[in-house]
Length: 176
Image (cartoon, rainbow, N blue to C red; front, side, top):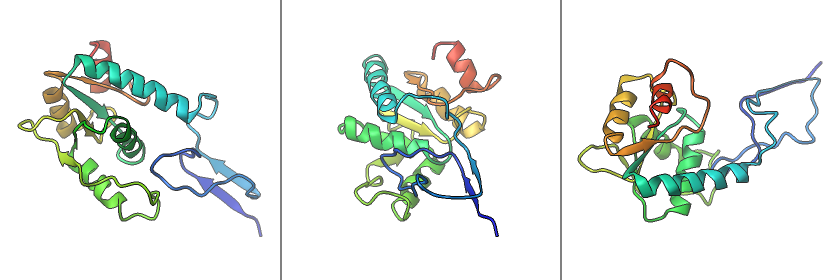
């Protein structure tokens, strides 16, 4: 006779993902994961800052690497950069490409968002402006290999919390 509300990493503002708003919902018990719940910075402000940082980094480096979580944030960043830098080229690891393709068939992607069609599988022979690796800490061998290749002439941009002892932490320490 009681209601329970459970939500994973909840954020109301997105460019790509549809969400069920939880405002005005009623429940006896609610469990809400808001990893950055005390942060008052708006989504738009973070996006503006990211675009400025990316624009500046791209003037110095041929390729930018984004180590992103397997689901969620990577698609949002990809969409943001596609819109702000329409002439840039994009690639990703196999998992990221799979996410882009499957997202188009998902009911959780906004109707006006078209993700696939202009992103390729990462290839050293065909460099792109931006590369997505579906491993934010760069723990897996595939992600580490991509990072090493990109960083020969590129730069990594971390968009989440970096855990100590990981390749991502090492790259930050080395200024890469």
